Length: 129
Image (cartoon, rainbow, N blue to C red; front, side, top):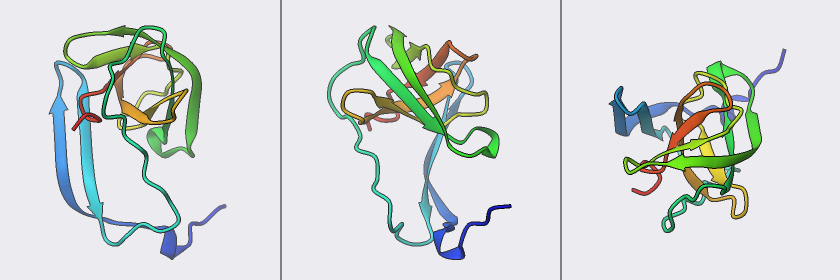
């Protein structure tokens, strides 16, 4: 079995922001951890531009506590006025909060929120703040 060295374990100490909207499926939380994270770079968040049908995206997450899963080769299928985007991500259930990234710029464009496999939704609203 694998173990994670204690210096690589971070504990959440304060919830800075959170939202749950069962109507739209949005749910997220942003936590402050117990110390500065070392050896990792934060994701660059896309701050301008709207998603367009056909844009290539991918998702990185840890569904149900599994090791990291990367879901590549997806494309935006639809974008509605509530900032919810549908893409054909091959993502697991219980993957809420996983980052959705632009395939061309590798910027964080949203957070995975819901959907059955190959018909997943993500929201850009959380990334635009």
